[in-house]
Picture 1: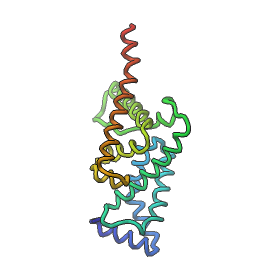
Picture 2: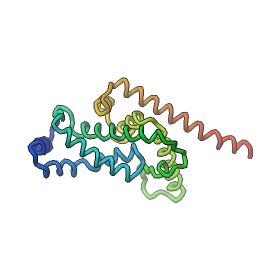
Picture 3: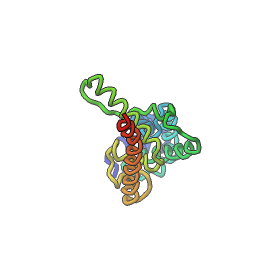
Picture 4: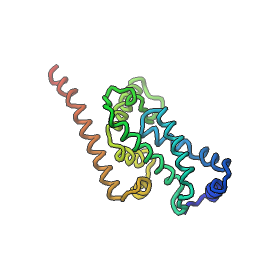
Length: 197
């Protein structure tokens, strides 16, 4: 059960028509929702729109919130499902690896005062991870983000994405395999250039 009595009061007050209570919910969870949306969509403006849409949908569906589930999990499930829908719509268009949307992804890879060489390598690694993440189907990307950025358990991810733990394990396995295969493909041209020289 949701253990935060303040949050439960805000939920009930919102259901009773108190918009200030919902503003408290938005304030408390905006960062988490935005971060999830940004990790999935790799575009700041689109993540901001998705964050706003998540809270609109949450407000409309608040009466269906089950207080036996953590509120954050419920809210992030709305966000991840909305982002998956956006990714599906996006897939209709062709996205090249050089697309500016893909190059905007910045994943947090921090270290204490990296050398310029390390900073350059970190930046290149971040760009590569962002590009590869953009190639994953939405359902796989959601599972990866919830597992590796939010450290959710398989059960929590399954609840957030309305599926089973075995389905999540399968998606994560396939996502890792797809990423590994893509990395292998990307490294082949580099190896062949080295062999030619």
